Image 1 (cartoon, one colour):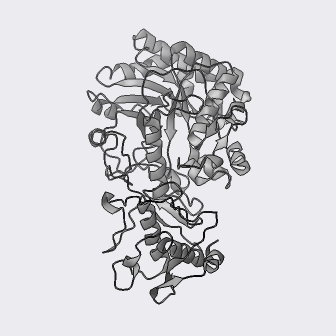
Image 2 (tube, rainbow, N blue to C red; image 1 turned 60 degrees about the vertical axis):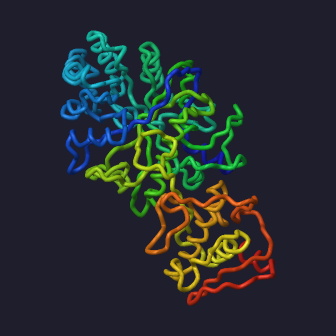
Image 3 (cartoon, rainbow, N blue to C red; image 1 turned 180 degrees about the horizontal axis):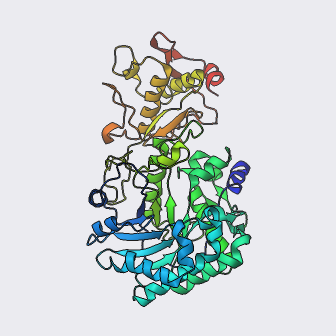
Length: 502
């Protein structure tokens, strides 16, 4: 518990308030422009329709895309790029011209519902900070003049890094350097216009920058046992994921400035599917896990511990991979789709309605972690095929899953068979830390893993869990890989098992 509290201390940021919400939360997607072979606006709209995506955010006000979105009903957030902020923030006329060109020219045919003025301005373009609120006010005045201010809200995305002391969330506050000049006037504007705080939340970076203090499962919305949840010592609220802790930190930070009725919309969040050698957790499996769990979490209208049931609508970053972005490899690989419209991975969204309706199987598998100790794998394999009561006969010589004949492959099959047999219950894919959950089907050739194609195993009677950090005992049948052959034998000495496994 102490370690988990420390890990959260190092990276969370956001707060709660006494907001009310009559609307259900929605999931949207960001569409960035930095991809070679960018799909045509027509193709992008076709993809949005096919995936039942009804909310998008653009990082500019792309005219061709706004025209293609006409009469689709898709809700659109358009953006003023940071490089236009200084001009708009210093001239009411410039702001009015921007609204005429990018808003009035397209509504009502195109359903523009909000305008994001800049993004992460305080952290990426601090010299524009003095005119940020003026820019919002000038844009809003132009909307009032066009009688569009009730339909279209104006805000600016804040980076969660602007929140300091963010764990426990109840002690969070905004960076005080900007409070009087920017944050307080911004919150006054949002409150007076009935708008919301736009917040960019990136648990991936929180996890990466915690240097091991934040568990990966906590960042990915994976289930945690109660004794591993983070607890705010002031409120006694329990946090099961980074996302909620950051959002609540923002709510609390606003409360610290006496603003308790401004809702939050998360304008960016996601997980990269590929990284360079310094980014080992930027993987397809982790990206799929994060975004799938995020979508279900948001659409369940779970809210946060501070505000249960209060909608936190969220935009995933992003629709397409952007291969033209600079920086580490991960910067190019946040997309749900490649530029050709093929999915980077298949989201697993049973119960999420028609959104991203490209999978309904909720397929997950349990496999071996890479580079684990062969002795530990062997011991866990023995347990699965023995006390775990897994049918390991497909691993015998001459059977479909015998090849490749190594402990990693055989253990992966046995771990997954147990995981599926136990109906994917919490704790059934651990095996002393040598197993991990994946969304990639590990079947190969004629070796079909249990759970493939949605044919999950059913739970048997009993309460047995895969080996964790507790001891276990008993006689079992051991499937043993010795590098050359795979045989079955009966081990009667439980102490030998304890020595190998525990």
